[in-house]
Image 1: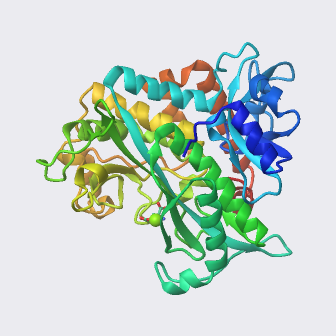
Image 2 (image 1 turned 90 degrees about the vertical axis):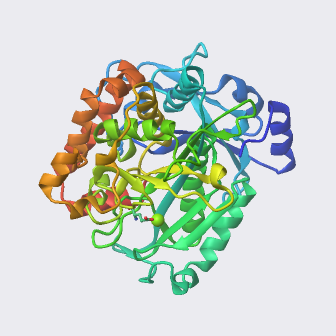
Length: 458
Ligand code: GLU
Ligand code: MG
């Protein structure tokens, strides 16, 4: 959660806590969290001017291979300018604090390749065109493992999903994670051992959309580092072990309005699933664009090992009430808190996504559904596993299979005029080039290279 913080209170906190290093962080085109560090004496000046960053930084792919993109060569700088509201002491790193940054041009205007700016622009559009703000929660799953001397990974346990044994093995690390998250004002909502070996699901409370995306970055940082400090590896790879359940990062979303922003516009007590017409339109938009949208929400080569039928990851373009094989689940609201808790769960999302691009893309697609009244209709509303229907039945209903590779998804993204227009030509070109370079790099290698390169990076 943001605290209202200005430069002088930040400087005070830095001094009081004996902070020596302040991380200026951003999430890059490839979904990697990167940054630079500023010393405490330099902070006052750098809060305003930012830190210089080569423009080429946004042309790096997930293997640090620099792509040849116009304007992102060896010449030219942008500025990493921190958002003071994201300031926090880092409970897991000595004498350290961090802030999340926007990527700005030298004159202080937003850079077209800044993912955080992209999300903010989509949120402004949603507000000005339809009067919506979003309550959002990312729901990350991840795997705890040990790295052997030969570099191979082994899950920390083979406990059963939801089992108390699965709570025993990682208890010490989970305790430290919960403490570290709470110290950053990220209260945990729920936790359980998930189905895969070593797999965990731990969620923090929902927040407004930009905060939720910011929180997802601090969340990934915290989980990874606390585990590391205890000699463990936390993997956010979509499919770290090919024989185990994949790691999703479902996105929960509801749309709010009213003078105090306290009316859930997705809620309608009269509907059979308590979803409003606006909610159905929003789903319709997501489903309409989903085969292209997954290029942003499931953006790595490894993502497509997870998006397989009958693995609860979603692989078909459909929705359904509490349907965990549907790409969009209409989440049943909690009793007596119906209007506050009714929400949509987008399941075709994973932790390798840049949360600003993923959430921004989801909002673009949903808004398009609202503006064009794209009701999913009965055909896309499923009370069963779409894989259990015959091929003919799926075709009749218009239930499409999601792309089965990053390459196919990127080709669909390139053809999706709504998403491409929202990204703008510069960011779209950068994204397609960087991601296509990952497709090519992994195509030249085998499975073990893929697993290795996704296991501990996101
Ligand atoms: N692990 C599943 C996925 O890849 C989700 C399981 C669940 O429903 O929580 O999305
Ligand atoms: Mg789960």
